[in-house]
Amino acid sequence: MQNRYRLGRLAGALLALGLIVPVVGDDALVRHFPKYHAVVNWQTRVVVVQGFAPLGKPATPWALRRAKDAAASSARRNLLGVATVIVPITGDQKRRQAMANEVLRAAARGKRRDRKLPDGRYQVTLEVALAGKSGLTGVLAAYLRRSAPVTLLTIASRGDSPEKAYDLLPATGEEDLLTPAEAKGPFTGLIVDARGLGIQTSMSPVIYDPRNNKVYAGEFADPDFVSDVGVVGYMAAIKAALATSRVGKKPLVVRAVGSPDEFRRCVSVSEADAARLLAAAKADGFLKKCAVTFVIDRQGP
Image 1 (cartoon, rainbow, N blue to C red):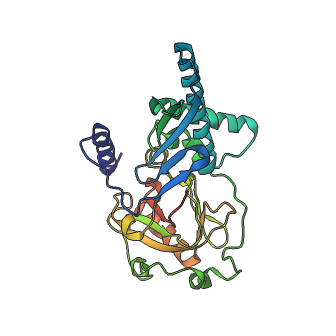
Image 2: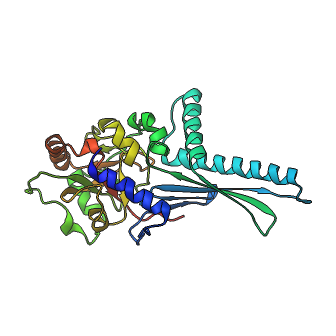
Image 3: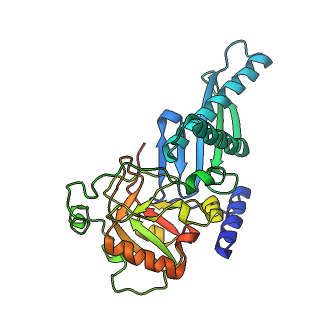
């Protein structure tokens, strides 16, 4: 594995020991799932879910154990609920059950915190990694590499060509950070600015060209990198993405022109950007390393 990913693992270990403090600024993407009592932090790549159960009275040892088990089951169900949102679970019942079992495996390897609440309930909190061999991307790597089919829609919402779609997108204030057409490589990664399109975070997004041909997906990447870092990273600003090690010191930065799936998990880039992306990736190999970040709108609860 590359040295930067070894350093990433070392940083993760130091975080776990409390020897360094994570810096989470306004450009960190945190998505809340109130329905599932869950929060997903795409910068620290952690899912935190909670489950609850009434403790009842009297609080006998047997009642306490029953409440613990019920709260833990509730937390696991909530984790499955979040997983179905960020990972498109498709296929027959057997395949969906297999994926659910993998999610439960990740839950078993995560951190668990138990406590009794003042209101008489018992709470179980599960903290599960998004990345790593024992995280969600690790246990679901095989499914992530086989990206789910999408319902293809018109690229620009008003039916315009991709080139005209730029005029329909809102200004970001970071247009000067897009890579000029004449810029030469080598490039170390890719940043896709997809703000204004309502893109949702996902563990298996795809980049398409205007003809709905795949330009990048999990199956194009090295399985080890898919497991360790996920298919893409997410940030809320280009400057924030440039400051991360994921895309290296000289990434190719392009603007998305649409989303070709009804769930808004995938993006489309212009034909010109798709062509130079494929050429740069072939020459520099950054897509195989999942050195890709999407810049998307901040996501509320």
